[in-house]
Amino acid sequence: MKPETLLRRPQTNRKLTTGCKILDGCLRGGIPCDSLTEIVAESGCGKTQLCLQLSLSAQLPISLGGLNGSSLYLHSEFPFPFRRLHQLSRSFHQSNPSIYANHSDNPCDHVFVQNVHSVDHLFDIMPRIDGFIKNSGNRLPLKLIVLDSVAALFRSEFDNTPSDLRKRSSLFFKISGKLKQLANKFGLAVVITNQVTDLVETSDGLSGLRIGNLRYLCSSGRRVVPALGLAWANCVNSRFFISRSDETICKERSENDESGSIYVSRRAQRRFDIVFSPYLPASSCEFMITREGICGVQA
Image (cartoon, rainbow, N blue to C red):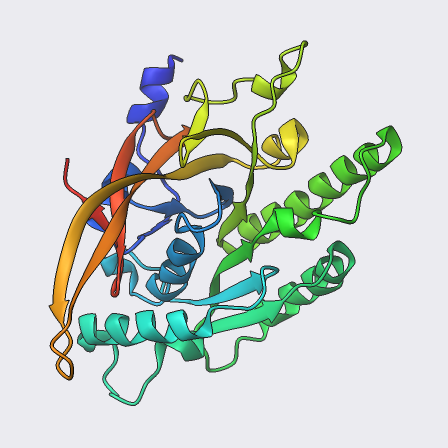
């Protein structure tokens, strides 16, 4: 069977809309269920913004690209952006009046946030997720798990020694194995964010090892690589990369009613790339972050 044939085969797994038609077009429908999706980006690029938006989009009915379910947000980057979540929730509520018959319904009630302080803490939490899914009661069933971010859990717990690196790699496979098990058992979408580090060239060339569609990754004018190395790259099914540049997509002018002062807000150019995926060809799109959430920019 040729790779082209596999790409033309219909996907049987459900997908979760990102809430943006342009991003959904790039992803051929959205984030897939039954697999692990990684979003790699440096700080300030929008990976948490996208995860918050996905947590709300999961509540949409299947006919609108959602999963008709709730979300579990495992958060290791403190503090959690509750204010931004409530802001997105208000916009989401106003944009989808048909699914909220009771105007007092709050989409945030279906996003369950759990702080994760360490790798050991994560392993304490994961066995309880199974029971949390089964005992949904009257709430929406859990359909999305977000881990934001995996790199933060390993930032300072391990030294750069052979024994620690072996131990760290073993933990990678245990974490990803448990999350894949949950995804396959309950038909969940699992999204994991990861950070980047600056690319340091070495004589053996391993730091610049190409993985996926892109020859190299560049953000804010720097060459970067995903954190956690090749061992972690083998643990995820799909890897997406978000980058930003100093270029401005658009400027907005607004007047202050009290003083009459004019403010100009600039939106940095952001790019979304498919690094590797078993069901997607190489593609990319540009987007910006607005008050209402992530919005794709038409090429």
